[in-house]
Each structure stands twice: as C-alpha cells, then as structure tokens.
Image 1 (cartoon, rainbow, N blue to C red):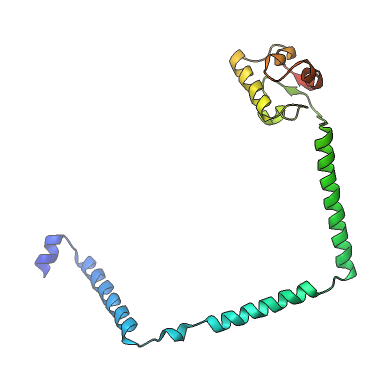
Image 2 (cartoon, rainbow, N blue to C red; image 1 turned 45 degrees about the horizontal axis):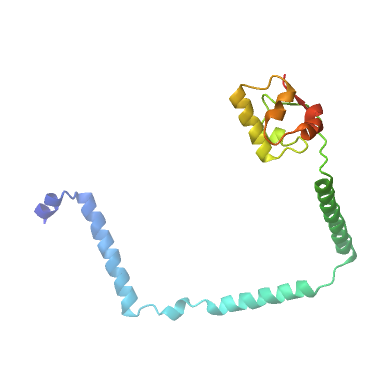
Length: 165
C-alpha cells in the first residue's frame, strides 16, 4: 500500500485526511439510508404556519387601529412638509431661475459647475469643456459663443456669472 501511495506522491498526512473523509462519507450514507433519523423529525411547517398567522393578526390589528392625536398631528406635519417640498421643485422647474452666488471660471470649471449656469445642461457643459481643451482655454468670455448651443441670448443670461481669469 505504501508503494502505491508513494507512486502517486501522497504523504502520510494526506493519507490520514483521505481516510477521515471516507469515514465521514460512509457514516453519512449509513445514517441517511438506515432509517435512523426520519425526515418528519425535522418538519418545521407547523411553527412556521403559527408564526405567519400571528404576524398577519398583528399587522391586521395595526392596520385597523385608530391614530391618536399626536400621531395625527405628526402625520399632518409630514404631509405639509412633503407638499411644500414638491411644490418648491415644481416652481423651480417652471421658472428655471437659478441663483448663483459665485463667478465660474470657464478655464478650470468642472461640468457640474458649468451646469449651475442658467440654460446650461449636461451636453452644453461637455461642449464647453471640449472647446476649452481644443483651443487651450478661453481668452475672453465672448468666445463661449463659439460653442454649439450658446448664442447671443444664452450668452446674455450667463455673462454675469462667468470669467476667464
């Protein structure tokens, strides 16, 4: 036997590990097919059904329970806040007036900074950056009109917020 093991290059430690694995496999097969443990011993469907029923009852109680005054007040406050936030978003999107509290340098601004300018979206911001990289930067702010999508009207809207320093 030792000759056979040495021929395959199996060490004594590996032989012990193989023997333990074979022993465990054999023991598992014997337990499984001998009838020693019946599958019914591990049936948890009864307690699972009880848990589901209890959980459903608890949720039904909560659903049918009336709100007390404090809960009603808090619920109303949350609804008012949500409504005001939603209407603020609607007003902002309708007016499209964005207040900028700083001047944006066209020669080093990121796309997100350029998108703060009125009328400048993601596509035009990327075009501005491409133009800047191609030409080596803006020399004067009027050059921004060379970017596709920026005409005199849009330039008038943004000229107070841009610089080329």
